[in-house]
Image (cartoon, rainbow, N blue to C red; front, side, top):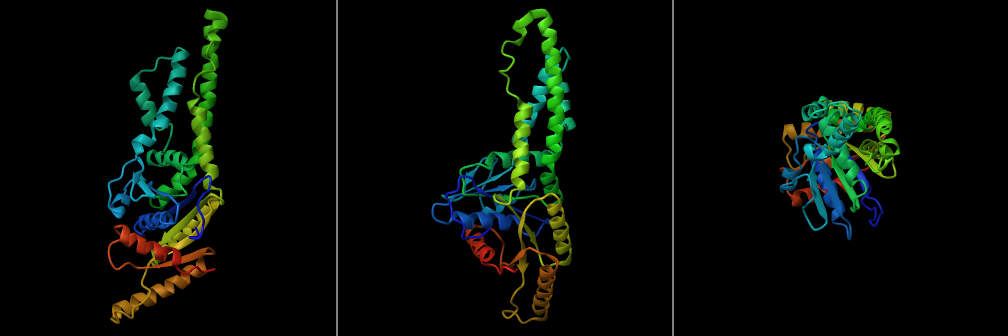
Length: 326
């Protein structure tokens, strides 16, 4: 994402920050959205899809599952897993309604077991997808996603393909049951059995269309960019390498890497430890540059906690002004 991009688009830019737990994804996402929002006539929304939310702590405000105004041009929210799954509950209810129409007895307890049994897998991830679908076309210039650690995020990104197939099967079952029920009613009521038959909302088809849209959008380099966050440490580099490889397999466009918490200058503290840290990080940055084909943005370590708008604004300046390699 280039800071020189202009606003006024019909649909918002979508930026996802991901990586190993504890590398600073939330800070990067919040700072990115704040930096975009301070541009003239530009609005931004930052969304946390991590079940262990810390976005509100970073912005120092209380957040919910609905956009909360942080500044005049910046809003934020934290995905509400329960609210996000309402669409999937409606699918179960729609299927249950078809079964009942066909004469199959299905009580409320059976309905709840169907929902909890996981016809739609991955509770937190499916809620995040619903939010992605909801805000992908929202009236913001930029929507930034603070994603969960690597494993959760990969399940989230792989879920559209899984759900598309699952919902396709559910839709076929729904149509077969509907045809059976209609045929049975027509034997009793004749042509009157078909009155109003096309008025029902197709919850399964509607959800499948939204999921397909999300899957296509996640793979669209014109709209979506994934930024991998890592620190200049061996384990973080290795996990980032695996993440980039898996994103490539999923055809998710990786925009760049953010090397966070870099100890760049030991001149202020000539002690042996600081000199050693600076030298080690310099070696790790060279290693990152050699192992990845993507641009790398180097962001220096903050002196204090990454909380509050002033600190995030300072961090955002470093995030966009960081050295771009390649």
